[in-house]
Length: 225
Image 1 (cartoon, rainbow, N blue to C red):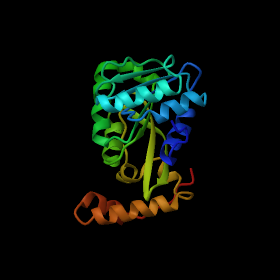
Image 2: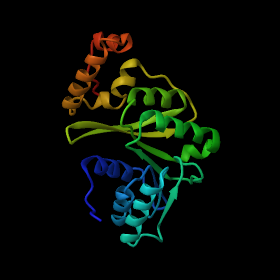
Image 3: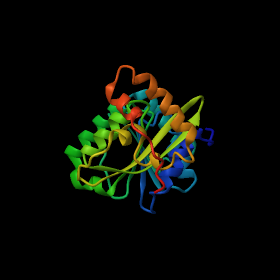
Image 4: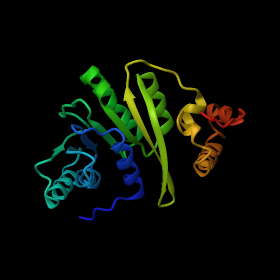
């Protein structure tokens, strides 16, 4: 198995490293090919891993990747929907990458009902393929803080990754924060191309969406914080 990650997965690995401590596990939801957790284990970012996928064929690919890299004693592969049947532990880093934002929302909603306070000791690294504003808004009202956000460009498309922590205390986001990201807004001085990409995307959507149109009409001031 090739150990080099794509730009997107390398960004996720680097962000995950920021939240890893010696006892942390990486839990890769929808792992598919298993490349991310295998990379993290082989490079000492995490000591243990759990890989899940809802379908048997991707779960089998993940299991093969784990076995081929002699990591079966440190990684568990589970065929399940999201995190159903997976017991979360303190300092776990849960990655949900390449899933739709609404799918991520549904998985997290089940966790809030099931796991309660243990979520406060877990970090979530989220890379939704779509519905990012809707996911941000849901996370805020459901008691999650967005601790960090970063973006990357790969194969002609921009991806945004969110690092979030559960506090149990709902908070509000402005519409601009919902669409552009509360942390990304502070980084646009160095991420101008990503802001321009979002401006183009929302410029098209604004034709039929008054909420987005209002955001684009408001004056934008670069934050220096």
